[in-house]
Amino acid sequence: TKYVVFDKTGTLTKGVFDVTGIYPGRDFTEDELLEYAAYAESYSSHPISKSLREACGELDARRATDAQEIAGHGVRTMVDGHVVLAGNARMMDDSKITYTKNTGTGTVVYVARDGQFLGSVLIADEVKEHSKQAIAALKAQGVNPCLAVILVGENPASQVYVRGKVKDCGECGIKSLELRMPETTTQEELLAKIAELAADKTVNGILVQLPLPKQINEHAVIDAIPPEKDVDGFSPVNVGRMQTGQPCFLPCTPAGCIRMIESTGTKIDGKNAVVIGRSNIVGKPAALLLLAKNATVTVCHSHTANLKEICANADILVAAVGRAGFVTGDMVKPGAVVIDVGINRGADGKLHGDVNFEEASAVAGYITPVPGGVGPMTRAMLMKNTTQAAAMQNGVAI
Ligand code: GUN
Image (tube, rainbow, N blue to C red; front, side):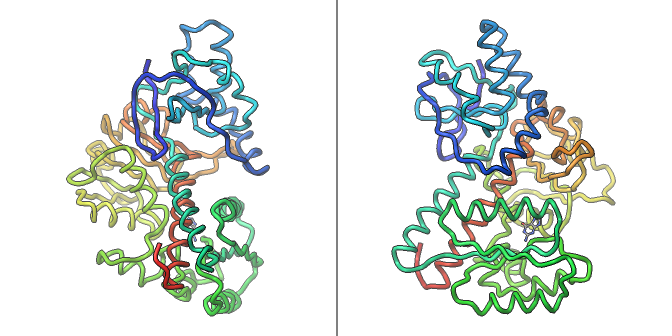
């Protein structure tokens, strides 16, 4: 039986364990439950669910049915002090997994496919847990970290992302100010709001959710955020410091990608890394961070010739193009670490990554799911940056 086990530090371990109980589920917001309900259908046809069904063929019909049900929603369970992940590692509803309670001790029935499955939830949880402890220590010294998140307009994806960020702040003990401004906001109005937050000593981090409405110049806005409060790591000072290897706030998504790659035990040093996409938010900084770790880095984009051949040589493949299913199985080197940054809402209303998961997961050594991969990790890195900002601004070591 093959299955995947992460310990609490996100380290991947394999072995045979006995089921001893359930890992307590986290609380989910109503929005999240609705979102996951919408994806439940796709989960049940998810390749991991399918391989679970196959693996469960040896079990009696009743147990196999339950296992399918579990797989359909993603499972995590405590096994000898480890957390076993199957499916998306996200539960819709704890009541759905009461079956795992009944397994008692015995052979683990939760199986992932041959290529290991890299779920980020526990890695993200670990980063968040670390921030939580640092924040408690800061509070004991009279420092109350605070993040201001500005959302201009009604972009549905941005609204979901901002809600996630605010929720994570709450979980970590960071005060959040969710500031919503109308779609018609002028650049002057937004700059005035940023100036106000920049001058406010009780605000440690300022994040302006992108994209912005077209009447607002993104560069002017990012330039207005003081570098010491720029927890997104987007300001020219932080970008320049990153490029030259100086201490700075690292952009959350690329920093999270590196963390996930390293969590697999993969050494980045000397590897061929290919980044598809050259955005300021992900592609370019991801390439710089991989280079800083001594990878041989190729950045591909819409003008790249021989894309398939270049990708097929990648030990590490980061897909950040914004096109659903863009990376097909034949573009993946066997055993590669594939990080899918894409979050594309399909005509079917569901979220799709930039990678064709079904094809790529049959080839990759490790692959991140969408949703539930890079997204939670990005938010965890934001918590880390905000904690750091609060500590630095108050001259407190953490
Ligand atoms: N839009 C998409 N990703 C990001 C991000 O990491 N930060 C901000 N501010 N906006 C985004």
